[in-house]
Amino acid sequence: MKVGVVNYGMGNIASVCNAINFIGFEASVINSPNELEKCDKIILPGVGAFPVAMKNLNELQFIEPLNKIVLIKKVPTIGLCLGMQLLFDDSEEHGINKGLGWVKGEVKDLKKEINLTVPHMGWNRLEISKESNLLSGIAEDELDYYFVHSFYCKCENNSNVIATVDYGVKMDVMIQKDNIYGCQFHPEKSQKSGLELLKNFCKI
Amino acid sequence: MIKTRLIPVLYIKNGLIVRSEDFNYHQMIGNVVNEAKRYNEWNVDELIYIDISRESSYDLRRDDHKIKSYSTIEEIVKTISQTCFMPLTFGGGIRTIDQIDFLIKNGADKITLNTGAIESPDLIKQASEKYGSQAIVLSIDYKLIDKKPIIFSKFGQSDTGIDVFDWIKEIERLGAGEVFLNSIDRDGKASGYDIETIGKVVDSSRLPVIACGGAGDSYDFVDLGKETKVSGIAAANWFHFVERSYPRAKQLMKKNGINVR
Image 1 (cartoon, rainbow over the protein chains, first blue to last red):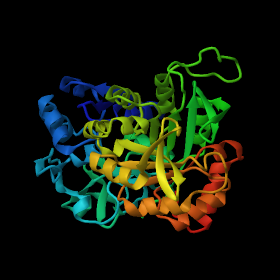
Image 2: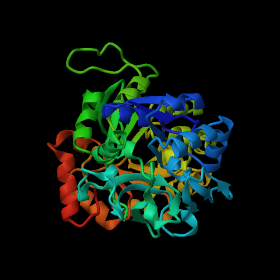
Image 3: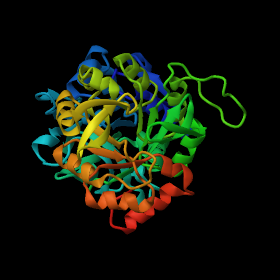
């Protein structure tokens, strides 16, 4: 089984691959769209700014092939951090920019809404809205995950929300719509709880 | 609510982990990767590695059987990021964007700038524009002079005359994402944290602050966590010498009402 980690020039590809390999699956860095076909799972990682990420996906011509493989072939796909934000309709980061639009909702600016330290950086406990196979086997007191972000996701349909975190405002930090998953936190940097989540994803 | 982080700091000198006192005396403690494994087993919140080697090249002669030294920082970053799945910060001696590219490409999540940022503040801007503020930690070493915290650069040897509060305003403007604050006076002294200065720094800025220097007892973590809104509590030496130090410290903090993982 091949877990494709999409390399579109944004962020910590090495950390994500290291984590996948460590839990006993085979990570494969996807540098061009024609390599997507061979993947049984897709990970969309990401560290950086939303408009640059969409621009890169566009320029590398990833968008159409990704739409096909995710929406039509329904390959299990997970967006991590910025990768999760890209799944939505649009984001407020540096003006309004369109995302992939796979999940209904928007990405909003934390600084405009709260007075706390931004980025929201560090470990925070998930509040579960809905059961998910990605969290199976992880005890309630182990649901601490590592976050670093300045923008947050808001789903249009509550039925897509798996977990939220309250940081002055309620943020949707884990979502699912059909075969598409998203985590605002970094499971690849969240110790055992993160590795367990990734293992659950790889086993789908 | 976001949790207070407890962060072990590892000083690397010529490819080996060392204990530091007064920023000057360094006692060799162990192998970089073995130490990382230990912290991994303790399920730590985050790790900070600072390379304090003063020579530009590594000492390759120290390759005995008991403690293996690593010949390059590249080897260290790569090896650690393959086995440790927590936020990893690397720093020490960074002067150019190429060095930052290299560390991040090899698995560092964040890098620290210290003397390099004082010599060339533009490096903060360049780095944060490229990797985002969250990846750029400003390491600040200070001494109290007439009760004012003044920054010392070049391994804490050179008095810059810069006031810590002024510098933090400047680095925030340039795009730094976090402050790693070290008291030189308290390095290796086990006399407790400089709570007064740390509290003032935390209250003066919106940047998350990690404080270091002076931990001698796990009650020092509790005191700092209770009396300030610090984001991270860091220590180096203490974790090396006390049996099961990290999990025990976390337990004590929890018992005393500090929100930790």
